[in-house]
Length: 263
Image 1 (cartoon, rainbow, N blue to C red):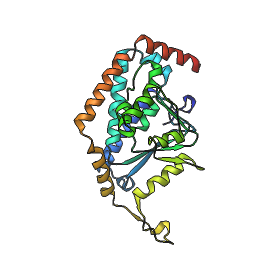
Image 2: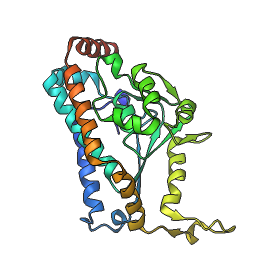
Image 3: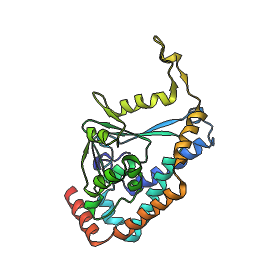
Image 4: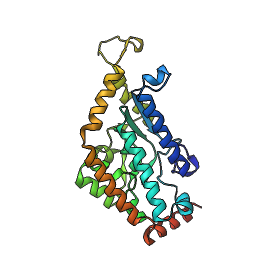
């Protein structure tokens, strides 16, 4: 994700680019590519450019283009679909979190299989402060990660989670201590890609890759473990709530007020 001037806040163009990227990844896993490197893809890292993961939706874009309930509904539908398809890919994913993951940015982290967070990073579901509910499918995914009680607290009280707190709540899987989150993420994904014999003296060149089809197959099992119908029902309910709240007075006031602060 790249929009450094706005802390990687999502614009409409970025939403379209993310959807296009998922389209490409779906083609790769279907074997619709002539690239050997792409054919061997088993894992990926999702991160933000610079020192911030993602600050959510760009409120200036929201104020100018997505302030109505109808447009908010279209935006929600696109991001729900994109992130759901991303989560279902037979590729093992990790969100590498530096700086802030706020609002929609926090929702994006939940679409990954794992989360690696730096000690100084902060995660916060700020939707309630914007007069709305999660609109990108992050609510139901958060419940699957931390359970109903903690999910209610994290979303309903808009709790600010530090790196260690995210680990303690099992929201994040690994804490990057003394190194960057991206380097720790690479290290964390390594056993998925390479088989470790744990033999002393083994060099990197001696390591054997895990079979690509097997790794993708195992991820497919996890992706399909939850009933599709139940997942889609949750997403439809989240979308309906978001559509009802987005573009209402409380939401408009919050968006306009937030965009003024950024100027």
